[in-house]
Length: 472
Image 1 (cartoon, rainbow, N blue to C red):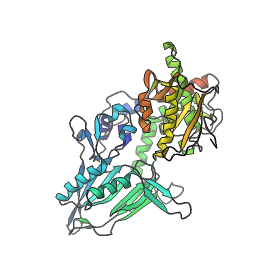
Image 2: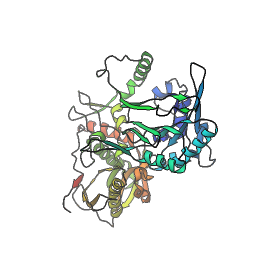
Image 3: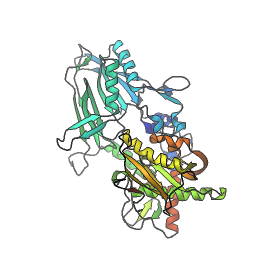
Image 4: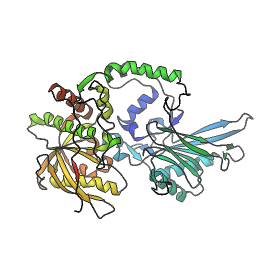
């Protein structure tokens, strides 16, 4: 990779830590033995980011550049310059913790693109590519099977064309929403290669040295699936990459493969890719059973009882892998909870709990499928005759079946990401913090260890915390 931009996960441990890894600096805090001993080298990757500036200085952080110009040379000696502009979604305050996003201001995406598109054109650069961590929404008609592309990227490009109809943005690489896209908006080609290495973008175009731009109608865009060795046995492994991966596996194996517990049966627990129709999965429910237990243990000496637990579905990143001998490893738990978020215990009234549970369905109405997982409480919900909130919560009750009191105060454990209003859950911002309960990853690992030690191997929870009621 030669040129890249920033995404929300580059902020997970603070942008400074990402920059440290990028340039090959030594760790500034103590990690595990494998990380501390690893040879830290500069990646050589050039970051372009045009719409993130330091809140105090209004300058692009860490000497990143808003754009780059690369010169493409032909065999006949002719040259054409190509400009690259980087963009990050302005929804960052909903995607990471306050301490990670607050040092920066996030400028409107279309305005930033328009600003640097004009600047590049003044420099004689008319072949322009946008690298963006902003997503699309793709819909496929059930009858015609035709796919349409909409969502934030389309909105950004349409705004760009309103600001500057003569813009010279030829190609827009999208990311973030985990969907496929291969479309055009105006004269701009838009591509997005799903997520997690499932596909890759491949675009071919011809540069015209007379116009200093891509030749008319020369851009051909494809999004190809990444095939496994079984699917395409003709492809050979890259020896250099294979050696790097093997070395990393050997270094991390003692940590990743250490057994922390056992499952009741030798079967993986479902994750967010296998949600049921009500957005519940076995690993998600297990995680918050663990966090409720961990919070109760952490606050016991404070004479503070934690009643419930809630988390955002996106915070549970994978299903829990179980080995054929029923063992569960540290690596499997880390895959589930990779962020290391602090757990906060907050006080909320029954009314606030109703409000935040309804907030997820308001998010659905706003096009954001951000949902909550719970422990210690269950709820009934039904259809709602309101496009801005297609469902509504009708009854919330504890595991004992007793409805919660709207006027009573309860203690709820949530992660710091939600406390800052992450995933569009602004209701949590109003909750008062009363305690902390450790780090989510550590709490999950400890729960698996403790349950196994107590003779209670990990079993898949019953998915019964969200109950749909028809006709109410």
